[in-house]
Length: 297
Image (cartoon, rainbow, N blue to C red):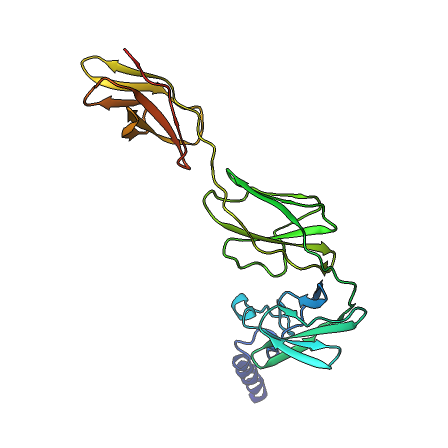
């Protein structure tokens, strides 16, 4: 009987000693970041440039939070240890190199004091560079568009766009194979900056000078139709609207002088004097078109 009680007590105590355990214990965290997946390459004239995306995970498979990903720094290894550079950016621009020079890059990410492994090497041989710039023939702006015309290109043309003069160093806004670039993703009255370069796959040429463009609506609206001055016991003007869709309001003129404005199609005149009355349609850009003189009735 005593032996039975001892066994029951042992089992009872064992149940308390294992309380709260849920599976195997987790392994300790490893905060070494994985290397970047892919090292991209460009040859700008004769200067090698590499760029990459930040690694998304640590070695232990846990995701690097986006805020922490921005804190990563990088070690750039050139030609397997011959030169080493450090950067906080996700691109690295080297120095001009002679043609037929072979160069290899590896990149390792660093999180706080944890240095990750190097990426697979990206190796290239420096090719004959593109030294010419695209030749700009004309920059033209209009209502809601910017148009840039180039002379006959030798390669594809990469066009970079900005509204602050700060351009993306890698990705163009658009690439064209012909001579005409039209940008309709613009706002009238706002200044935009453009620059362009030749591109042949990884080979890139020098940029043009920065081009300035300010689209604007310079086309006046259609005039109001059939203006009539009614002189009954009160005096007022009526008219048919302008057929233009961007008309914002109408101005009223007496002998060439503005005496009021309205968004309606009727305007009451306090002092109905002899003279010439006209209605001006004003669009969103401030362009104005006057009607014919109002007919008295």
